[in-house]
Length: 248
Image 1: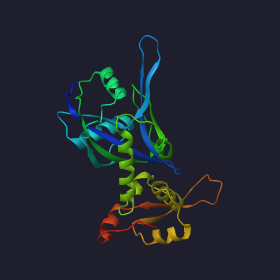
Image 2: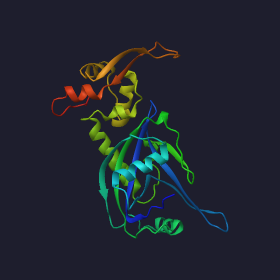
Image 3: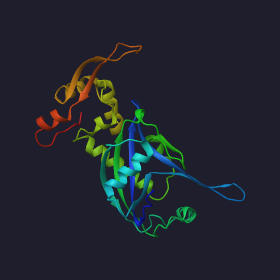
Image 4: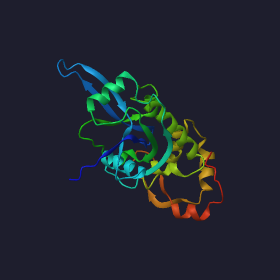
């Protein structure tokens, strides 16, 4: 096994959003430190999915490695949304204690590159041997205490997602390959924190030639089966003209 050497002052942090057909979620990793003698919990909070880059990889590769280790998935939508190098990023007593505990040779000052990641969280089996990894509703995260400056990074990523979803078809990254129009409406509502009139929403979708109706409907549902649709990247690239607005 090849031992990779970390870059002590450069990391990547991934804000991973998922959608479960009802609400927008974010992926968080539990951080816990107990007193070795008493067993008392000294630190218990959560972090984003992140780590330092290795000397033999670039930033995108590091982000992909981290997400592969957490989700087992390749080809996840992944895009930088900012770089963060505030002087006090890792200076709180709690965070310093954590860094001393893990003793990984990190620098006192760390610059991180934030990545926005989007996946269909209903298809993911989370995995991480050393720590617990879980999905949390975005509404809950707003009230949580996150490690380092990860709360700030979370808000920056959420704002980036809300901006981009209005002008790019990235909401489809949060859905399975086949989806209903109701599911599509819910994902836009969940991301933007609002609600849309059903009729107006569907009129807008009818203008999106890259949202293609299939001869396939839901099965095993209590209500009238809804028709399935898919998003065609090829059709989107061929038909878009300049900047497209997804605002409903």
